[in-house]
Amino acid sequence: MLRQNHGCRFVGRGFEQEMPVHEEMGKMKGGGGRSQEAGQLCKFWINSGGKCPLGDKCAFIHVPVEEIVEVRKLWLAERRAKRLDNATLDWGDPTPMNEKLPHACRAAVFADWIIETFGGNEKLSSGTGVFDIAGGGGQLSLDLTDRGVSKCTVVDSRPLRVGFALKKWVKKNRKKTAQEVEVNAQDEEDAEEDEEVDEHEDDGLDSRQQKEADVVEPVDASIVGELPFKYLQHFFLPESVTPEIAQASLLVGMHPDQATGAIVEAAIQCNLPFAVIPCCVFKDDFKDRILKNGKPVATTLDLVEWIKEKRPEGEIQTQFLNFQGKNLVVYRK
Image (cartoon, rainbow, N blue to C red; front, side, top):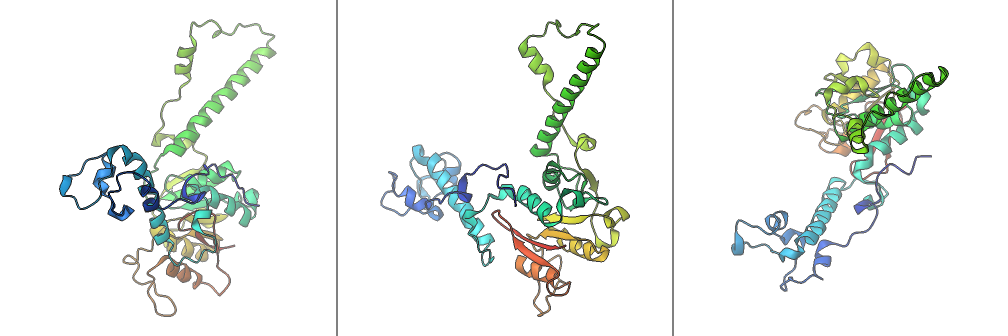
């Protein structure tokens, strides 16, 4: 079974029906008898706390200043809802997007699905492990290692981006390591029959000073060696697959942009299992992608079909995952 708790709060569009902004604002004062749909609001006014370069000449609605905070929340919610609906228009997912986990949970959901679909942690940790192509800041690999996959490698053409999640993980790991060292040191002292007194017992530090001493310094790209996964700055192409990649247990890509096709082609070339969640198509960069029916690849669903057409029917499969947005995974076991 897939894990249900993905470390995301059950809030927002993903877990409760939201009243359209124009219906909710109609209850507010300041309506002025005019429709206040999101498209008619002055975005300068609500985003600046009540300022507009056109002033009274603006053709759009300026709600009362005291209502801006609440109106802006509703306005942003409706904009997000519209973007989500547009992004998944004709998507074919049988489960409504407003019943799925938030987009921010995509890595956790994908990690759980990978472990369940590809044989568990032991199998995924075999060979050289999972290669997370175009993995950016490594969130997917971080979630996989947290779930017990011991070998993960992020491959990206850009330098490692050390974001909040990685900094949090490193800080937590450093504190854990420091605690383990402290416990081991105490065990050694006990074995020596307490012959030495703890030299920090009366070091004069008050509680505030001790807290300051325990603070872990901010991390940067120099912490690569401390991460639970390897990081390779490498422009991934099928023709440049290394022996290490060729022995992977799985090639994955979560919204890997231009690398989507390369992941699939490299996996087929090396006879490896793969799982990609396509997003952007970049049709101007790949004008040679043509479907068997002669249609150029122009949408994400076209890209999915183009991938499936690379192998005999039924060999490459698809499945919708439980997060909002582009959530269709294309895979081969």
